[in-house]
Image 1 (cartoon, rainbow, N blue to C red):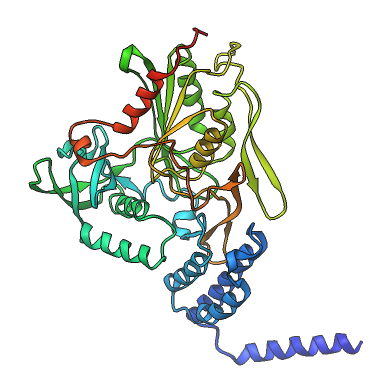
Image 2: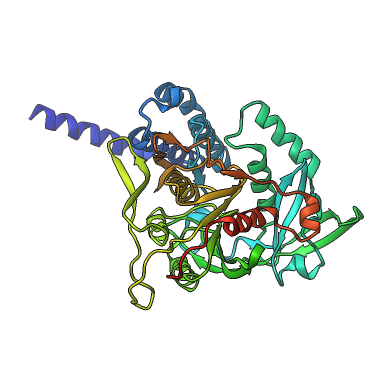
Length: 444
C-alpha cells in the first residue's frame, strides 16, 4: 500500500507540474530524439557486431565521450556527422547512416540520376573509362580517355589532394583509387533533370566545358528492404579471340535477384563456347544468396566458397551445381575456362564470389585489387527515421579475411589513358588470351 501511494503521489506531482510548465520546444524535442537515436545506434552495434573486441576500440568509453555531444547536437546534420564518426572509428566497411529522406519507401528512384559517365583514377588523373550509349555524355561527344578536370565547383586536383591527405592520415577506409571513383561518381549523379557543369581535357588535351543534364539512371530499379533504390544493368555478348577462340562475356553491376534470370540465360547460351568471362568491374555487391547460384553454373560438385562469420556462428557459403537449364533441360555446369575481371570498384558480394572461386581454383582473376569491403550487413530504423547499416559478419576464404585486403588478381592488368583513347580494354583482352591458351575441351 505504501508503494502504491508513493507512485500515485509521483504521478499527481508530475501532472501538477505539467499544468503550469511550458510545453517542450521543438529544439528540446529534437534533442531528445537525437540522444535516443545516438543511444540506439551505439546499442545496435554493441549487440550485433561480429568482433566483440571492436578492433581494439573501447566501445563503451567512446559512447561516454560522444554522448554529451549528441545531446547538444543543434540539428540532424550534426547528429548524423557524430554517429558517422563513431561508426568510422571501427575502421570497417558496411557501417553507414542513410538519411530518412532516402530510406523512406519509394525514395531514391527520382533522387539519383546519371549523366552516363564512369571514371577511374589512372596515373594521377581522373579519366573517363566508360560512356553510356545514348546518354547525356555520349550525346555531348564525351569519349573514354577524356580527363575530368572540374565537376561543378570541385576541381579534380583539389579533390585528389584532399583524398591523398585522408589516406596519409589513415582517415579513409579505402585506397585513394576507390575513394576517387566514389567521390566523382557521386558528383556526376545528381537528381534527374538537374545539371552539372563538367570541364574535360579531350583526346588532344584541349579543354572542353559541357553542361550535362542528368537523366533517370538506366536499368531496372530494384529495392532491397528500406535501402535506396539501385538500377540493374546487364550485358551478354560473344567475342572471338586469338586462334578463333569463342568467348562469352557477361557483365552485371549488382547482385540482385532480377538479374539472375539474365545470368542463367546467358550461361546457357554460352555452353558450347570455349570460355566465359564474368566482367565484375564496378560491381558493388548485393545479396549473398545469389552468389552460390551463379557459382553453381561453373562447379560440378557441391563446394564451399568461404565462411560467413558472425558473433555466434559460422555459416558456409555453398555452391550447388546447376543441373537444369532455364527451360528445364538436364545440363551439366559449364566446364570450360572461366575468367573474372575485378577492379577497385568491385566490392562485397563480388569479392565473396571472386575470392571463393579463385581459392577453389575454378576461375582466374584479372584486373586490379578489389575494394576490400566484404562484410555482411543488416539495417535498422533509428528513432529519428534514419537507417543504420551495420556489419554483422565477415567473410573468410580458406582462413583469409577479405575485409580490407580485397581479392588480389592472379594476373594484375592495368588500364592506361592511351588504351582507352585507342578503344582497347587490356584487362578483357588478357582474359581472352588466357582462355585461348587453355586446352580445348570436347563439345558438351
